[in-house]
Length: 117
Image (tube, rainbow, N blue to C red):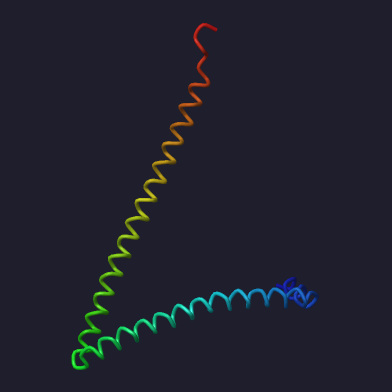
């Protein structure tokens, strides 16, 4: 711990540069997240406005129905993604097994002497 404090006190310019880089990276990450959040809010407002202008008395029910459909679709997508991940993991394991068997087979064929020599 003392060595860290000594480094910080003796290399202030380096620490400031590292802090600047970290802050810059955080800025760009959060900038993208903020843009995504604003886009989602804009989409939600557009959907709500559409249902409100279509029929103001039915708007709360329509919004609830849309939210439920969104939850259902997103859970289906999540489930499909998990299945694809599991299948990919299975295929990777099988390919590793296949390559190991192929390497063993090649090693065995190289070790056998050729007939007639």
